[in-house]
Image 1: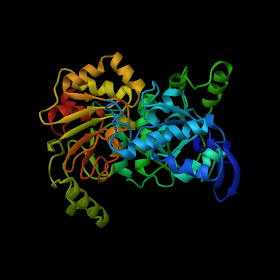
Image 2: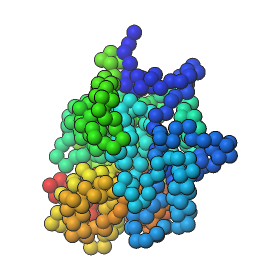
Image 3: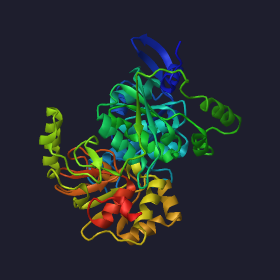
Image 4: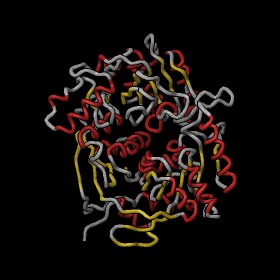
Length: 467
């Protein structure tokens, strides 16, 4: 009999009832709750007269709608204010820990979960947000769920789920000069497409992954959903243990020692069989930048805007044509010549301390180009505190960036940080579909150092020229 993959091992540990045909009722260990997806779930709970089964297994924090300029009680609109207020009220009513906007633990759910030690190896963790796959960097099964599923987790601490097929993505070759893990995942999605991972739980492995920090692994798993997969995972190792040790909600004492022993055993067996396996060479990659309206439409910064007429696949040709019309780009234009209006460094993809350090390294002693508006938004209050202790905020401010408070900010256009119609943004976020950052806004996805370089140049540029 063949061995088992990491995903299969954690899945089998959490099966409450096996319904056959790869469907099972799963026990859910952790639930992160935010203001956008939870109101309907709480309403369903109240309507049914149910209580939250295990309040201690949930943490609530507002991140999508919160203002990142905390000048008083300012919100983009009344709906945003009501969403945040309702989350606070619902959490209090049901005994769930709520982290307020001015709390030391506040931040984006996918940043604070690991910071608090709420995210742990071997767990099943859910949240009403598709980028919950971020937490899989710690060797857990983490995925986004809908409002009705949130209600089920509140009431029963379980979910009926279909087991995914398994895919191993071996990333080999290391990171070349000026290339980050953000470039790797963008290049991988460009290779396999936004549907390449549909139906699969992806396990990332290989020499490139082993050498990554935990923060870089979170960036990698964060964008598994952009490849179509709900689940991205990395097996726990000593880096995982080192990151989690001493976190507020992580185990301690004898329980910690027992947990570590168990966590380090959580890896795919040598003879495990995957439904799909690919190897992706990272050794010769250049920095990447998206030019279309999905992460799949990405190229090396040294390239040019493609010609849809040169694309033999009719469906892809039409996708390129529509994307270029929205993005207002002409075939043959050098990507490094595309002028930008805005720069956004932040999000659950690239709002961690390592991201801010890397961007500050490019900005030090330099100035944002005239006419470019740039903001840096830490992913959490903790990240902001660390950055300010290191003086990173002074570098951003001296360069001409705005230095903000924690929140999702310009990653998603439901707060006050939005693009105006026609504005073009160099963004470290994860999605670039039409209107994502604001109605009519045009988004180019890239790494933090690429965004910093674009801010200085006033146009998309190869960051290697600044290193």
